[in-house]
Length: 455
Ligand code: NDP
Image (tube, rainbow, N blue to C red; front, side, top):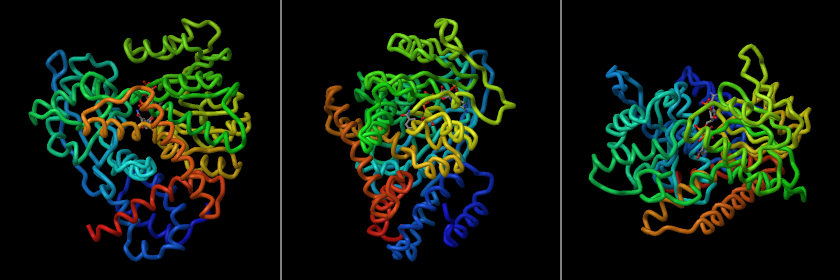
């Protein structure tokens, strides 16, 4: 990547204004490198200072969430909602509950979300929120009390036409249920204020599956440009939560062989392949018993469990021979050495289920090697796209069948792939899905901002 004086100045100002937010700096840097190509052709964006406006959230809400545990002890967590951009629709983006959550991480996620949502073809602005609350090891009762406290403040800032949050790390069906219940109680209204809802109370079929399925559809589209399919491909998958589970499910349907899964303690490598039965075990382990991935290797003797070694610079999950990788855990899980390991072990398809899982150096290595690299804002957009479909069903007060939602998801993923591919080509960088996604997502938002004046 070459860096122009515009990018250098913008980044210097951004870092000075937003210190100690390295993930936000990283996300913006990757995007503005691509947008340099646009500014040459569309100088009006520059004089309207569209990019400078896009990196400044429209609104940030930060609040205290006090709650009591089962022993009656008082805890205080911090809650956030970053409302980044509403030029093309109400703010939309997940809530993350994880001890690592801070303002910088949520700003990076909200910024990415704006461009991702634009790519989906649906009318959704971008936002993100969450808390440093850790649901791990908490009872259902404690999680409920926390969610109720969190929503007591958040409900002032969200609504079906204003801001529609969803799940993310640490926020699944259980948490969305508690959050929705409290919103309904406080506002006395039953509305589509959240997505990822239960099927009996406004949720959409395929929403739980959508991010993982979408990442696999995107990989299949990338492979199709080389007249290849996923059939028989060995795939490395990280994480073992929502995105990882449904990535594995769809890979199996496409005849691929997923061989790894992980959590923050370690990973399993199952050379024979994770089958449908083994995946059922993982779903029960993670979603119901809330156990650790090491139990997989206790149950299936052919699998090997390796605990995380904090002294290692690389992660051994990325050292196995494979053709495809689906990072589906968290940001920056593929470091520079990991990217080199992936390339030297034969991986030539990377479809990012997690948000920004690859460090900038790794992104450059993938682009230089000209592999099929699907960046998160394109590859994992299936989740929010299906949230958009859930909003449509809520507004129309109807429910579509599983097949109908899955077909729409598949069509949207193909459209996102086409946009990325054609945009990369149009801006002189064929095959570069990073430029394709960044520019493709940006243009629609930028034009809407131009139309709406200085707001
Ligand atoms: P879950 O909470 O369901 O699962 C997260 C998984 O990643 C768990 O296995 C978790 O392990 C692991 N993980 C989380 N943080 C870390 C960490 N710091 N180090 C190592 N492992 C970690 O979340 P999702 O599956 O929903 O989200 C995974 C990724 O996908 C995130 O980047 C999220 O932003 C992104 N994403 C999710 C969407 C969705 O629809 N859910 C939509 C688009 C993107 P452990 O249990 O040990 O914490």
